[in-house]
Image (tube, rainbow over all chains, first blue to last red; front, side):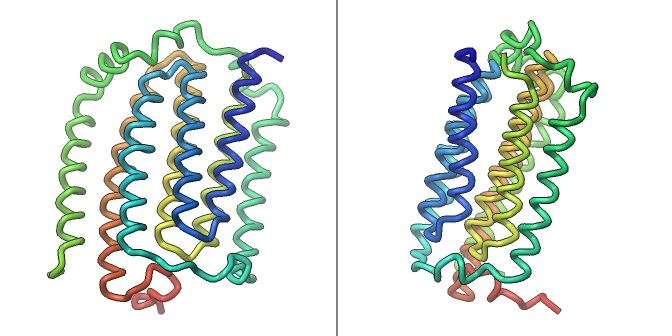
Length: 173
Length: 100
């Protein structure tokens, strides 16, 4: 087993197990901390995929900005502990878990036992992959081919900022 | 080298974990975090295909997904604060004004 594979398996285990722990914790603060662990594992996986810039942005934006916002709201609302999780699991929840398990089984069947598919050609990373994740190559594509979506994203963020301020104001119109 | 199937399997498991969280949890903030988990699993798929196909477009789309996730988190948490101010709860089962 190559060192790349070992590194990937460790990161995959951390990502999956912290995701499962995230949805099973009763306390929202614990959930948020496990989600941050999941984001860090994903940033490591982006590094194994030669996407350095995405990995840095993942830590800065997701683990830094978004999760601090979530934790801030959790602290602000000062939520008391809820009832244990198993009291919430009733027939509709069990049904939805079953439906999600069926979807997962279909996805895994498509990925694992579908021999001769186009995915089998993608055994190794592309030779150009090492140069794709740099700031230079991302910026070149982002500000030439995708310049209009970038400007629209700026407007989206402005609208979201105004919306958040208006919604969280004390006297909501 | 790690075949692309491995990344896609991790992504699928993470996405279904997020779906189960959205469907079973009642706390609005945890539901938001589950949505973030699903968006991140899609990002992993984008980056994996970008790297294995040698095309930077997948990584560009990760940035747009992150921008939309940031906007969604800001507006969603503002809604949670407005909800808590009016109803003193974030349990979605107690917010049934529009339910018929």
